Structure formats: C-alpha cells, structure tokens
Length: 271
Image (cartoon, rainbow, N blue to C red; front, side, top):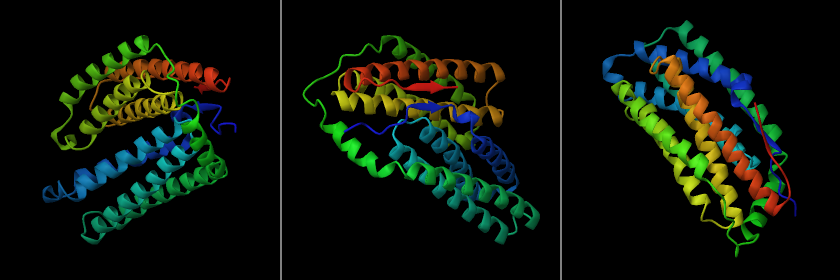
C-alpha cells in the first residue's frame, strides 16, 4: 500500500492564519500586562501559555509529513483557543478588561478558530487512509536498520541548542514556566529525535526525522514570538532563523534518502 503523506511541507510563515495567531499572541500579552499582580500565576500564566501553544502547535503541525499528525496538532490549537477564551471570559467578568477590549480579542480568536477548522476539514479527507498507512509503515522492513549520516545536521542542532541555552537567560522571569521552558524543550527534542533516527528501523527512522522536523519548526515559532515580544535582538533572531532553516533543509534531505530507499518517493520543503 502506498504511504499517504504530503509530497511537500510549506513554510508556516506563509500561512495567513499564522500571522493572525502571532498578532493574537501580541494582543493577549498586552492584556496580561494590565491584569493585577495577584493573577500572575493564575489567569496571566494561563493566557501566556495557551496563546504561545497555539502558535507552536500550528507551526509543528504544518511542518509535518503525516496528515494525521497535522490534524492532531490543529486540534490542539482549537483546544488552546478555547482555553484562552475561557480565561478572557473570566477576565471580563472580574472587570480586568473592558467590554470593547474583550470583543476585539474575542473576534480575533473566533477568526483564527474558523480558519483552523477549515484547515482540519481539508486534512480530514486523508485520515482514513493515513491510519492504514502508518500501520503498514510500522510493519515495513522491521528487520533492517537504515544507516544514515547525520553528522552535518547534528553539528548544527548542537549549535542551535547552545544558542538557545544562552538566549533564554535574557528572558523575563515570568516566562520561566512558559517560553523559556518550551523553546528549550523543542530544541532538545530536535536533537533527541535526530540521535534516535540513526539507530532505528526503516519506518521508525522516518518517524524520528519527522518528529525532529516538527520540533525545529516549533523552535522557530517560539523564536518568532520571542522576537515579537522583544525578548531577543534582531541579530539574535536572524541567527536562529538562518540556522533553523538550514536544519529544516538538512532533515528533509535525510527524509528523502529514507524514502528513496523505501518507496522511491521524494519530498520537498517549499519556502
């Protein structure tokens, strides 16, 4: 059975909904600044984490060759929109934000929600075959390990992790359990899955590389947010973006190598 995966993954930054999610994130952070100090570890934290997760899951889902995995990430975006809106409802009831502020941000969240649902509907038509394909992939050539050379991309991912470790030191303390942890986790996940891929069976190698691909895209999404919030400088952002894009290209090259060995198909990264 032919594996039902995308023939290419596009740049999430080209998606209109991604730009709207970033702007929604900016508005939410402006609202958080106006909340009372005693809500710092309650509503403020809930709003920061949920809107950041929206952006990250959108990026990770888009940069994924499996339709089912993309669908799951989009579904997570919906849940985070719901979480964010519930915190906004509480903020309005408590008198922390005005009616006009509430209506403005609620409209933005509704707009994003509708766009995500549209993306899920387009993806849904592939899902029936996807599960069968994943099962087939798991059973395919389980007795063979595909040797791949990850040395070039491995060095760049090590460099990225080192860079992220230094950058998060300048994040504000309020991001300790949110952005600081999340961007560090995403960068580490890229490295872990890359390491796993070189000692896995055919099918698992591809899955490990696919997960690494999603993790680096998630890292770049958090760098977009960090730049938007002024946590990092323009030169630091450019450095992360350049390195992250190079890693994306190299991981996709490795995935193409695996696919040529297994299915004689080639996939693309389209900027």
